Image (cartoon, rainbow, N blue to C red; front, side, top):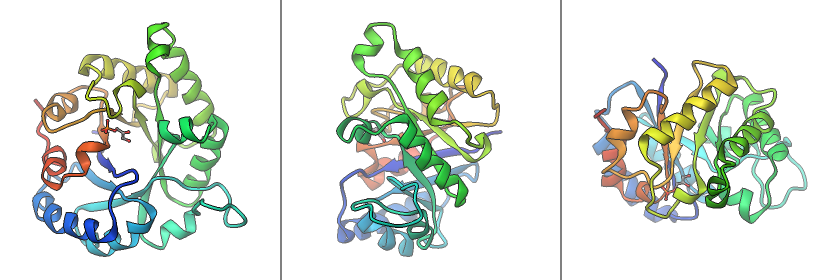
Length: 243
Ligand code: 13P
């Protein structure tokens, strides 16, 4: 069975002291979670060290929210794989729709980030997904396929997570219906041609819809934004039981 990966993306939330409070509430709630799943938190860079220290020896693993493709250098505001590995970071989110939208990240840049991540032993979580307008114009599959083909070029599908995050479902409370999310995840799996590829769904995941989402055949995990900010709610998500 493919590994389950339940990840919380804190985005630009949580100071170090807030992260400490979160972790002391969260860790006891996930201590007995089943072994079939990785429980992952992606704090902002400033809180990674704090969360890593508290999470050591627990069920929680770390992700970053980005990684640069160069080893080091004059890249203001970026972060290198080596800097992340020092804090035992395991995953790194690349190609999220927010940097795609606000910083015009291209599929080529995303691919460079993901390749460098894999080269250092980090597992990239490569995000793909269509806008509302693209879905209404019937372009969703074409857009996602292009993101997959360009973003995943040259990557090892066994050391990778793909997150299908329809942009219209992010932070809107409008979850993609489970069968439709599952259909797109199945298409992604067939385009990549790797039966073992771990594929997440993301977009308004919450305690009330996690069990149904995780019972879908092609959904192996979730990437959670808003609902990962509350330790009890995210613990319920991490402790999901298939419907
Ligand atoms: P929400 O769960 O807040 O919709 O955010 C999803 C997301 O962008 C996770 O990366």
